[in-house]
Length: 478
Ligand code: C2O
Ligand code: CU
Ligand code: CU
Image (cartoon, rainbow, N blue to C red; front, side, top):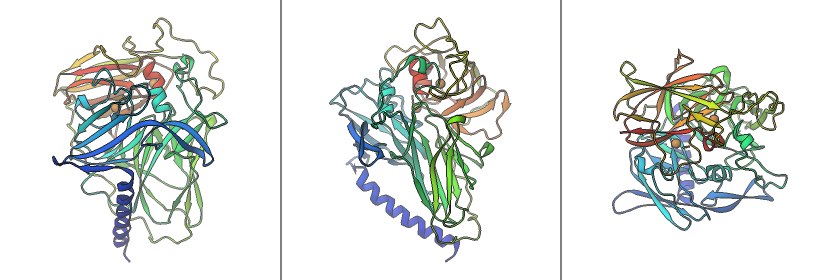
């Protein structure tokens, strides 16, 4: 069997398997108008996050944590009916999808919240293939922090050659010794620091143990950081992951800086991973973002079979680009967005030790811990959020995100993907597209995009406590 026939046959097998699993997992039907319909409901539930005999009370979509992985087709319309079986208002935000403003799921800003017992019909046509996710945009600290989130994959017409596809949805929980979700959401001190970083990271809803792999195979791995606040820096011992897409958008395939995949909350990275380890061996995947708190996320465990390939397949790694409008940097209008607030020193996280020393709160912000250009919008979205800026529809913009704080901020813009054009005024050689960019303490990032999607769009930090404590604003495109 040649390499390529191995590749195809394995892939077909996998696609067939995936299709079966999907039919069971996602109730769906096509209506007379040809639009595919999906239903999901948000409700209380239980999940075995850490051990099969320990049930954690969670909030979940369709009773699962994470919620069902929704697979949509690029360019094909979909109707998603969300039923609220919670005892509080909710909405769903389709993070990273460039969709009409009324479908963006921000309560008060783009839609009325979905009341308990009610439903909302989301309809859109995903323009971009890639890895996205969905989560509530109401009472986000509690709803996301208690489990409401799921992966949304938009498939392209011709999937890229890989033997297998894996998705790792990473979630971070703060659990009590009895495996219940600890109280204390919205702690003000924490909100002015790292946010609610938990003590238990799950992979696809369970404490990760092993990922079974085979020597010689090429895996497309979709990584999603669905945490409230935890930043991750993943290293694959003995392997060289190649980044092929960021936040769903294809990029020039490249190895990560220093071999570390940096994933702030809400960020996604797709990697191509050639399994070049030894049969029968184990290799750790370690998250070492917080120095003192490195842990093994999961182990890659090789089956005993010898490699089927003498060397990695030579199929190209690059993915076809999505139809994104290219910003014109020569005519772009420029704006500065200055992020301020928080504790004045930040070298760690709550519980990480030593971080209280020398800290002092920014004063004078009326309860909010953070601000953008001196203004603090708090919460998750509500009526009467005046836009900070009005951007002319169709025009190119460069936003200079200047982080004057001591903390990292994954800054997210709704409704658009943007190019990261420079960091600290140094041109960024990769110029990748993102919808969420991690801005390190006291650094700045320039992002560029065409304001082609009309409406009021949120721009906020995706560390949920930071967002709800003021690191949020609204851009109007008209
Ligand atoms: Cu994924 Cu406004 O967020
Ligand atoms: Cu979003
Ligand atoms: Cu932040």
